[in-house]
Length: 407
Ligand SMILES: [Zn+2]
Ligand SMILES: [Zn+2]
Image (cartoon, rainbow, N blue to C red; front, side, top):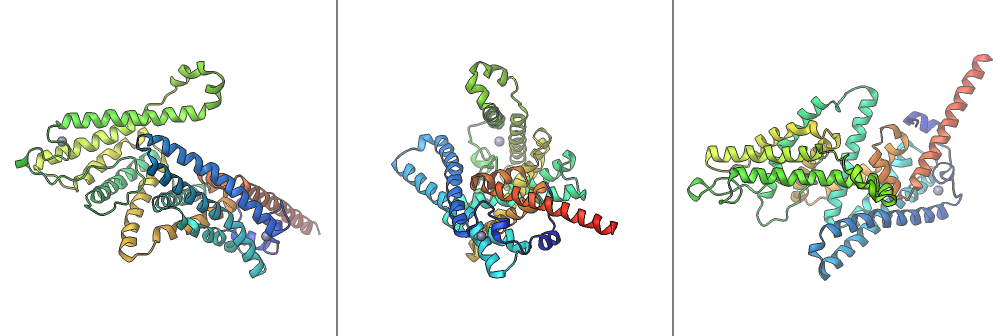
């Protein structure tokens, strides 16, 4: 896939009509937009349908009338937001092209995407927070991809990744522990694999200074964490095997035992080690000093980050960084009553369209999949069309250069 620079885009495509660049399947802007809305609705039904179905199944014990009605309302809100976020891109791009009389680099993708991103406010608050964090992480990943493609840095090195993960994890677990310590207030917690327990206000005179049950030995508490999180890690890997080999399992259930042999226990070891080391260190510090302190999370978090090589997923590091950023953003939001996190989502969405269309090589595969799913494949049609036009323009430029050299 070819990267399009700002200079190339503005010289090659500035005078294109929107139908020539953005909706080649339909000449009329109105009809093209109506088709795009239809595609985005179909994409959002499937995308959010699966998400809400899985989350409802995971909480099947909580099912009652109130839960199901609330779940349906949240689904409808996400569906409306998803449809408008995706479809506004084309509407805004056509309108901007018509008003400005030409295409500019930022009015072709970034601005229309950002305008569409403002519809995130329709979704329920918890879903808004989640999607905002996901998009910030994806944008950070695309920046890293760009730096790595240009050869500037090599952050995906396991050694560098481990050190960065240990530092970020120490800070994140400290912030999370402060957040879980809040009384009465509604907590806004970011996406993360583990929630540190509340700091205990107990002291030695009242019994165990640790933040687990008085009657439970530290050893049992640590072992329970190791066993539980090892199980969680293995379940994640099992789900991956089922999703990857779904068609094989469907056609031949006898293949299940041989597939199970492929189960990678590294994720389980990562999760078990992560929680085990954290619990062991915080318990040790509580026992040594005879009292609990949220700052122990810094030591525990730094040490537990050492298990990163078992699961050296760069996205995990980016999720930890984006979680830290969002905890701070939410504090500013609560203080000044400005929805900075959601506005950041709108900007990230605009930038996502920009990356997907102009620098497809640096676009994270998960971002390309989300954009494709939510537009039901229409975004792919636009990307492929612009890529084809770019190839033709490049070939045209080369042949013109060769011709002028001959003359
Ligand atoms: Zn148009
Ligand atoms: Zn303990």
